Image (cartoon, rainbow, N blue to C red; front, side):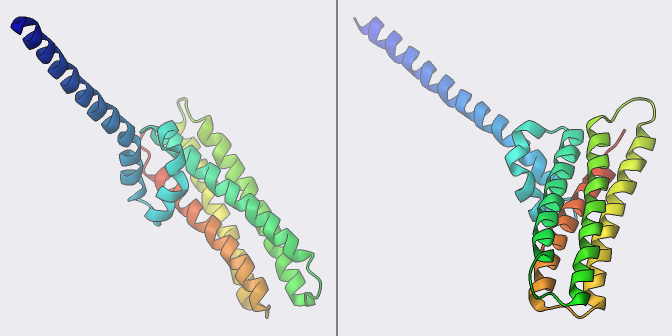
Length: 194
């Protein structure tokens, strides 16, 4: 009877040790994508925004730099679409001065251009491959840079014309969000090695 008790205790001890080892391995493998994302985002202009905007995709990204760049572009594109909607609603606001209406109209056009450029860059990143990868990456970087230029053009227009604080704050908040996300995407793209 003593031998059976000893065997039982040894078996139980082995099961407990194996369970703890499995949990440790499972935990470390689930934190690996988050660690990768933290490290990658630390190389961007806005690391906290980078991590916050991409953390829900970390298990899908799973240490893949190309997927990371695609998701970063996708997040920037969604921000641009949201900004377009916000600024378009603002353009329909009653009581805008003529100068405000013109600035808002220009910003809508600039944001739409940003959307087009981010779409092109996202599509190209999603299909990146082949012998001319460096050329493709050059195009992607150019489109993201152009999107940032359009965002900057919009905010410059706000500073050149007298606009109400409400109009200025609404547009600026939207544009700053796009610009930070696009800047982070560009930083991640610049760190790609092929």
